[in-house]
Image (spheres, rainbow, N blue to C red):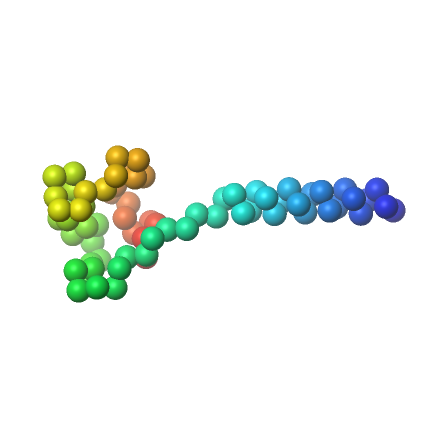
Length: 71
């Protein structure tokens, strides 16, 4: 019985670690005047394209899926 308890504890620990490692926290879209009415990713690129005022970092994930992460 004790071995089963230890086994279950180890499994729960591993599942917890996997869950914590898979959580991603994304920066929300700011609630300021510039961003308040944005509903189309094309509008995002007006400012966040490589040659614009606030370009995305090179390591940023796919740049055509803004609303997949930012809500």
